[in-house]
Length: 568
Image (cartoon, rainbow, N blue to C red; front, side, top):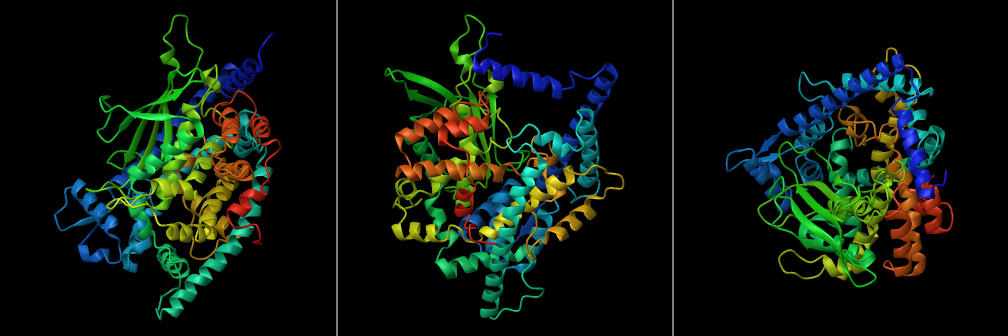
């Protein structure tokens, strides 16, 4: 066949798609596979709906005095949540939205209320009688095992990893276990610092540091050690300021301009629509994408943050088609708590916005002939590279100095606050890494099983965490009953590790800018656009990374970034 490299890649990917859809099965196997996939789809939908219903229905109703220690922005958000739920004027509500419950766990002086909120948050999917996501997850695991068997694999983990950069579950486990050991050492040191703070404060903390205490005392230690108070930073990180920042970074790196289109009617009044345009080499003005920004939490909206597309980029259009039909329509969704004034973000929330815009750029900058190879249609452990890499520009002093302006005075963020932010960058990194890596290890372990007879999810979770030596005072970021990455669909199942794998890639990739001495170096940015953001799946990802970086990725950049290079 006289095929271009991109066409050959398309044939390879389409062949794999058909094979994994069961094209090589006989008629009896096809019937079984269709029934299996239909049952999986139904169970995943039910799992998702149960989590959404728990998040929608749960509320912790409080009085103003119950919010002792909480910053004004959190108090206002809790009042807005109460108004949205038609509560009394003197009532405040903490929901299970991450943008409400995490700040509450960080700042609330009421240990009893922190415990109540934490227990509800970590039991989503099993909060209310009649909604049993554990039983659903167990059924899903058994069906996935059969799915893998039908394709000739011993386990679902083998089946999933076969089409990734990692290649095998063993390669994944090597990375996870290396980081796990380093993170445990860091987390143990962090807990000792929290316990010392409690002791020095003269507090009598019954039972020691519990999971609902960690964020609260970590914030106290951070303030004491680095004079870094999250509430001091938030006024400089309004949603408007952070949005301007990420769009400014987009312009500086890739030349994209965002033109608001308030006349475009969307599915909700909160959604903001933009035309994304760029100046071509010949001086023309080209429509690159249509971008929708849906930032606020609301009833019946899925939790979390994500990027999706209403239309993917393509040049493979029927003759006579308007080229605009190949222009991507991209949306970013967040779940920030909306108040009556400016929406103030934590640094983590601001990082999330940058992260999703990284995915958005993967869609908007796509330059493939075929939609099957465009945008985010890449291998699972490559897809988080563009998103996690975009987060790095939020940390840059020149970006913060230009865009992080006080929501009331308009004054730029002080240099000394930027300095304190930088000094505290890796604070509590052990905790965060343990929260995530425990989830990735449990995900791999449960999908590497070859036999699910008598499988009990609760027992398995407990025994596996005991085997790993889960540090006291920390729980998994996503427990099985609400682990939507795994059980709301199959994309991230046995692949939750991809965030860490991509962190190896993104830390190394940003190293190219550091070596150039400029976070906006034009030559590096051009290579970044060509090989990482625009190429999609037109070539194998390891080949694309080598073309960008000139070599294979090196994990040392990730370990240094996380402050774990010396931890053992």
